[in-house]
Structure formats: C-alpha cells, structure tokens
Length: 381
Image 1: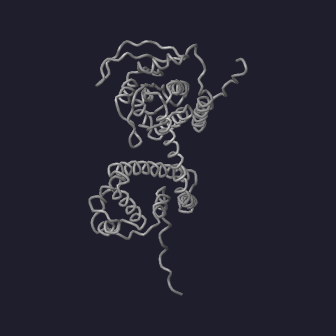
Image 2 (image 1 turned 60 degrees about the vertical axis):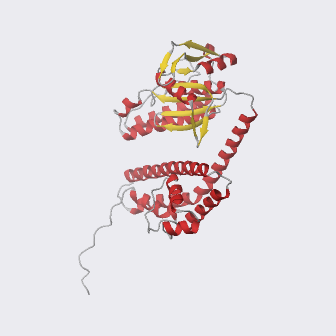
Image 3 (image 1 turned 90 degrees about the vertical axis):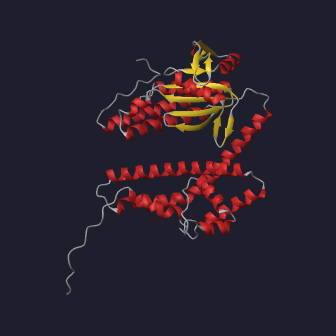
C-alpha cells in the first residue's frame, strides 16, 4: 500500500470576493476575439474614432495587440459606425449618447456590485465557517439575475423613452413660456456628520435620503435629475407641484430620526436640458438659493413667488435681498402653506416617516435598546 503522504492543506477560506469573482466570470460570457486594429477593420471605424467612442462609454483606451473586443462589441460598434456615416445622427449627438449610456450603465453596475457585496458580507457574518458552500447559492442567484437583467433594462429604457417624448410634446403644446422649476434639496450638517459616524452608518443616511427624495419628488410629479451625495436636484413642470414637493421634503425629514433637516431652494425659468442634465442661469440660481436657506426652510426665487401667489394657497416671509455669487442681489422669500394646510403628498411622506422610524427601531433593537411603541394618534394620550 503506497504512502498517501502528508495531508493536503485545508480548503481555502473565502470571503465576499468569491461571489464577485463568480459574477465577473458570468458577466460578459463572451470570448475576447479581436484587438484594436481588428475591431476597427471589422467595424469600419478609424482607430481614433473607435478610441473616442470607447472612452465615451467609460472604458480606458485598449492597448494595441491586446484582445479586448468580443463579437457583440464589434457588432455594436458597426451599428454606431453606420449611424455616424449615414448622417441620420450628428457625430457630436452620437458621442453624447454614448457618454450618457456609459455613465448610466456604470452606475447600474456599481449599485449591483455594492448590493451583492453587502449581502455576501452579511452571509459571512451570520453563516459560521467560511467556505465556498456558504456563498455558492448567492453566486447562483446572481447568475439567474444577470440573465434576466438585460430584459429589465430594455423595458425600463422604453418606459423612460415614452415618458421623455410625452414631456417634450406637452412642453411644445403648452402656451406657458416661463420655463420649469429647478429644485435643490440638501441635508444640513452632512459634512459634520460624516466626521462622526462610520462609513456604514453614513451610507445608511445617504440611502435614506435618496429613498426620501425619490418617494416625494416622483410622487409629486417631478423628476429626480441626479443625486450628489447629500443633495438632490430635481425638475418640475408645474410651480404648485414644485412647491408641494419642496414642502413635502422639508416635512418628511423634520421628524426623521436618521436625517437632519432638509433645506430646499427653488427657481423658475428657462432651462437647457442635455444628456440627462440641466444647465443655465435658473439652475445656478436654485443652487445658490439652497446654499443660503435655513435648515428646514423652502426658499423661492421672485419669479416662482409670483407664480405661486397667482395660484393661491401659500404664504411668504420676505427675506432681505441677498447677494448670490455670480448672480448679484436677489429678493427671496421663504415659502409656507397658507393656514398650515396639509400636504398633498401626506400619504407618501407619512409612509417614508414610518419606514425611517422602523429602521431606527430595528437598529437600536440589534444593540439591545428597546423603544416604547408610539401612541395611537387616534387615541388621546
């Protein structure tokens, strides 16, 4: 009988990277067949043009001779080349579209990786011994999700395309020439908070604020243009809807234990929309207004105040003229509801408050701290 020799090393321990490595292998699922020169030849694109498209999508320049392109890549680049050379789409428009697609998909991919990593780390914390069998189910679920994700993206894109066309048609048919309302809302004291809490707790605050912003803005008929950490930028076609959204954001954050007060700045005027973003003096004015607003306040530009006074239902506290950087002195006003009328977004706001309270309660409970149940608002205390 032969000597089996010394026992081999124990199975390697794994961490959350096991799932990420599995997803990396499944993500592309295509053979890298072509280098830069071959991709240019097959797609019918000059090298510098292909490099420019590749960079616009958010990818680094492909080194010469390295096989980085798949058949799908080449087929898509060929389609882009045909559009560029047909004259149907101006080259600068095509490059702009590739930048939007690249940045949007990068955010989607990053969010997915963050979610998978968080779940893998939780499984490792709660699952005992660290071995691959603990994380294999997560990898398998990721594989199934990746297969269905393109169809989800396609449908969501089509719905957003429909909504964008409808907005443009409504704007074209409207007699209104005042423009749209641009709003900014940010968390007061976020920079100081970031110095006092852990990265995980800070991420929870940002997540709660992002959920709040989307709940209230979208429920009120607005569009979230972008989130910038502790700040949200949104557009609203109707001045009254914009006022309700701003007041709703202020109301919802005021009693949220995990969020500081939100201050909001609103301005009405013409806006240039390009590549999913907005530009122009109205945007700059709204941003500057937000920076000087008090915690919990909603401050509006003179043009929006005039529009809301005509609509009725609001009161205003006149503020002394302020000098705003690169804009000059502007007469602003703090917006309030007349007679403290209830918000038209009350249901969405109350639901967000409930979710926030439960999140705080669950976190404290995990630390052995129990909070008493809040009294039933229908019963006297």
